Amino acid sequence: MRTPAPPPLKRFIWDIQFMVELAESEREILVIGRDLMARLVASDDWLPDAFAVPDAEQCQHHLLYSDGLERFSVVSTVFDGGQSLPACQDRIWEIRGLLRGSIGAQHFLWEPGNAPRPKDEVKRVKPGSVDVVSPKKVEAIQLSNALPGTVSISIHVYGGDFGKNLRHALYADGTAHAFISTYANSDDSPAYDIWSIKTEICD
Image (cartoon, rainbow, N blue to C red; front, side, top):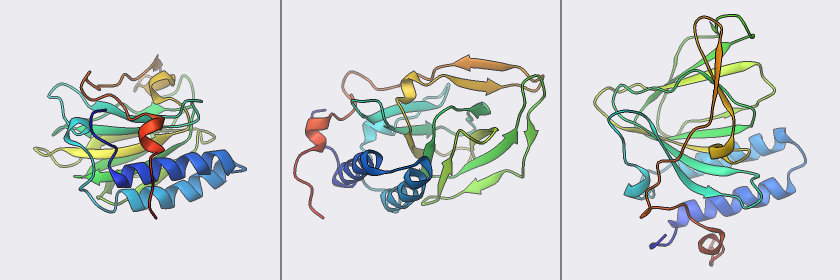
């Protein structure tokens, strides 16, 4: 990366790394991580434009940082107007904060061979909101842009390398399609590395 990591993102990644190293359980990670994410998405002035670029065809996942030991990764997901992700079931924990725009989040209950069943109504998520997901729950989540004609951006921390995580997209006939999401980073906008994160951090 030719430019240094934005201070709020640098502080966030630094704190997440220490949390993952010291936490004694997944529950502790999700509780502490929720607070760290809330601080990060409280303001919308730090994400570089290179990681906020939408695509007219599909949602874009931009890798911001991946831990060298693959314990966690930080990703920005960009939704153009009217775009949505399939209802997905993940095998790793997730902390999600909405930075910009508005998204609809709906949870589904699913058992192999059966159609996904909505667990509740679509929740409209506003900037600054944070949610956590544990893979221990037999659920799937679908995210969609709730503001047609606008761009919405969510920031995610996953309990592993998101670009290597096998996900399952669920369909109405009860089938599940296994896939791995790809990153949209260009050659000019690679993820930040540990050396740029370990520079001086001021509290």
